[in-house]
Length: 536
Image (cartoon, rainbow, N blue to C red; front, side, top):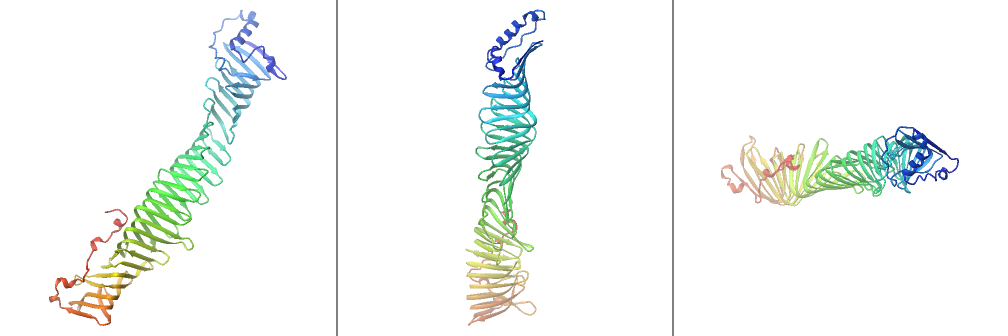
């Protein structure tokens, strides 16, 4: 084994100039061989290692002590407090051993790599492979710094040729706005892109994001994530499995089933876009919007929510559920709108085009509808028609239903009003029509009174005390007051001079059984499944 030690107290580079370390390694080898030729001749010839190209060899530019060793045909340098240079990067350490044959450096103590003007890596131990420019830095605290961020972990593998650092031990990245931790990660120092894996957590003063896999671009501020993800801010949370989030604009976009949850509502959809600053959201695919305060649920293919305005819009197989007491009101329409009164948390619902309505005690259809939870009033417009399980049907140009304790208390029919009740005893239909009709109901949505104002007409079947039909009453009068019992006219009174007649059962002709405009449309009555788009 051959050794040669060089020691300098100031600048050892001056002492090594004669060796010309920056030159070709053959010159250095030749110098050593000539100096120790008398000794080497007595030794057995050793195999020659393949030399490293001079332009690829890591060079020493400074050291306090340099020891050159040839052992078993391997040339190496032992450098104390040295500085190496390679491809524009500088390597510092307390002690380094450089293998000339493999161009590999092992360094210990106060290890530092400086690459360009921005990237610095520090640690306790360094393995540097000069041919591939791979640096493996480890220690109790290994740190990679660039101009705006710091990565801290136990071990970093840094591909200096491509500017990519990775770690497989828990790491922490800090920049001006974020603190990001994960168990594994990659950082591209050129594109400023991070890829994090396993237990990823991004903490910002405005939000916290947790996920399994995260790709973060510190230039564009976009974070792309995959796996169970949760974003939390002061206004609520977003839960999804795949999407992207902008840490600067607070915009987010999700491609799989995702839910936005805050104090007033939840918005769930197959794909979702959310503005984190306003908490406005847009969802597509099986959209469900739940207003928490009044238990209103909107469903559809696509929906929007504007948080500040408390306004929602949903369309495509759209329907709404509103739970009051133990009953549920369902409204279906081509497009549904919901407006929240933020002062008292009441809500106004609007359905537009092809409206169906279902409730346990009545069902209906029309062209448009409004429902206000503040006063429990439902308004039906454009050819509305309503039915009940109590065997009645109502039509008019417009209908207003007044609910009390979630049951129908009164209905106001305006314009071409027509009320039909099915008389199950005689298996015929009692009918009342007029310009305006007020229908009053008792418990169980049973019809108890009908007031007709203007152009009143009625056709009802009279029965005796033994519940036998005594004929058909046809009456015309400007105003009428009809009292019902079990869907039969029990008593009728008229204001003005009525024009009427009682037709005995044997003399009733088929056309006389129906008022003009009679149309019993019970087959059109919506079911619950039809109202929620589960059947055609």
